[in-house]
Length: 486
Image 1: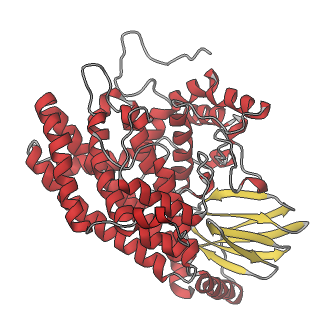
Image 2 (image 1 turned 135 degrees about the vertical axis):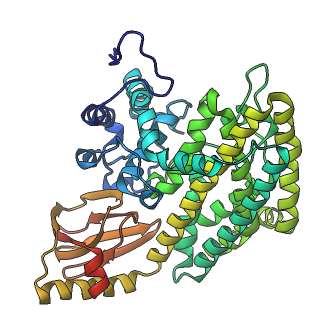
Image 3 (image 1 turned 120 degrees about the vertical axis):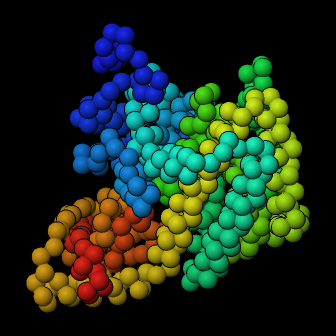
């Protein structure tokens, strides 16, 4: 495959492979997503069983989305973020070998499509531009935060990690409190566990001295699994996944990854694969270590109980943990001794500055993920309230003859809507037929003619038609309309 980069003789950019117009970028993204592996999901693909190459991206939405400019933090779960991160995950995954348990002729053909030159070259062409779209707000926010700060040292980085550990502990308590208080706690626990499982597929839970670059070029080797260290927190996560009844095939639950889950995964994937950003990767992994300790180490047993803990000696042994506060302090000191101090000795201030930047950028992404997950969990647990809200809004629209933007869909039996988000608040109004609707793993709602639901913007959901035909409408709800009648 030959790609022509539009640069003048003598021009050079250290950042991007080419200057693209919005139209050219759109064309390249469409060409990338034309790979049949990325087509929208069928009904039987709500879970993707033993097929690591099948990645529903929902490419039909590319026709009205733009990826040529960054968005702000408040839009970090918008549709272009979800689809952009899905594409980035697929691009990163072509750098590591994955195989189905049963490599049938069909799987081998998908293997060829996934790892073939066309897919890899197109992916690498659009990757820097997608990363600018989805991570631009993170880089800008952290650059502003660091603008007037002195150059970090080991002591200041230890202080930063201590502060971030406290922030992650508070976030973990809030998440588990929401799950425990949910009417369908098992469903909420499983949706949370899906996000945890997703993150393990591209990075370990903890930073390791094995990830530090050496003169032999062995940095980040622990990420590939060739020199991977384990820790009791890994065993605790195993208990949680067992309690959920989850299979561990790569990306089996791909459709249920929140945009912010994908963002955290892709940040680690991007920094790990780039030799120029290995120290940002190490900073991010230091924060990931503390986040894993707070949520999985501190509350994994409770999550497992809420999902349905398996009664086994393995579970008892894994859940016998020390006090979180004591272990957190010990973990920060261990990171300081085994990661920060060796980095300072071997590589000096530039490496510590990059570690600081990576830690802050990843911490910001975890804050975004916390907001995304908690809002999703609250929506999952408020189905009846959002049905009633939809009834009020539709009644006001009808009574006052309020003009609203409206999308109408006519779909046939087993026609499936790949999980997605909307960039505005909407109603779902069933005119005829039947639909199954979901907004979390294992949680289904059946809708019939006359049923309504309010769907907040940026909330992940999907559906499948259960009748011969289903006609439904999606009125767009403005902020003013919601404030007056919602």
